[in-house]
Length: 335
Image (cartoon, rainbow, N blue to C red; front, side, top):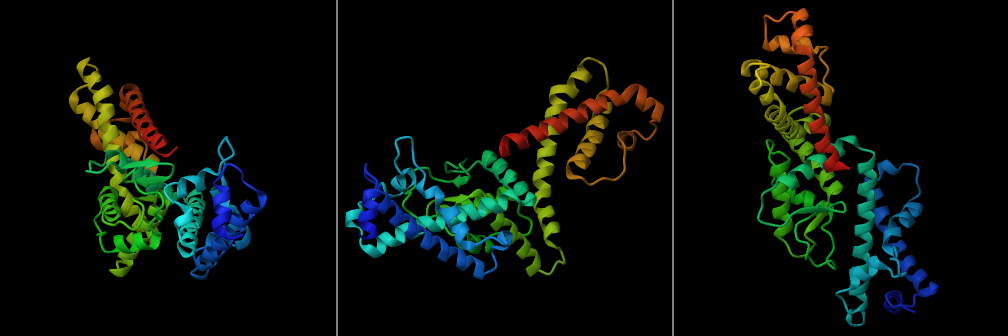
């Protein structure tokens, strides 16, 4: 029995073990070939010691997920717009192979993302940019994907990461930040019709990091990868920190001034010191400064005893509010 008949039976109400096994084995063959191709280019270093055969079985498992009625929901969704009887053998094999390659690549990117803290930072900021992006298209984040058009043809393959990397390599400039890069990604997805208008967020984060680092290497700046990532992330963090400082000042600080507890000049000193303190705490760039030294930078005549008696309580409270506001945003966007 050929692939066509096995697939047709698997998508019917009566799934036989032999038909299911035939489709699974074909998917396994595709997955193993794809993993071997990846391994030959050195892109599976994070799976050192694991057999490609085992990874192939693990990575195609999602394809055969069943719904409550026992239907193969992933396969049904993928082939829903197709009449399998009218597709020639070559095209049918190609369609199934594209589905397998997409699932394998998704799982590879998920595995990398779970063990790479720097990617998590880029992903969080991509989510923030998606939320804030004022573009013409309906852009959203759903089930791990950046989606530009929800009504897109699901039978189309997802754009290979290598293709998106090539497109972005010619578009990204050294001073671009995540929101700017996101616009280029959206344009790249919109400006083609061969692939779905979506991309894995982890995949996109890896691409952005690689392209950005290669940009610096090409211009021989002497910056290593961590430094390039730091430059990429600085503006996003600064923008978020500024937003949190303004929020706390508006919601809490201004009330202190209105009630006559402190002057507007003192409030500005508190906010400037608080911003520096929170930035040091969250970026782990420790300078052995205390809250007193940060406030003294704003108020040069401030003595330590005066700080303890008059200022410490309010400053600590403002620092706590700003830090909590930033962490709540990150938690909302990442978890």
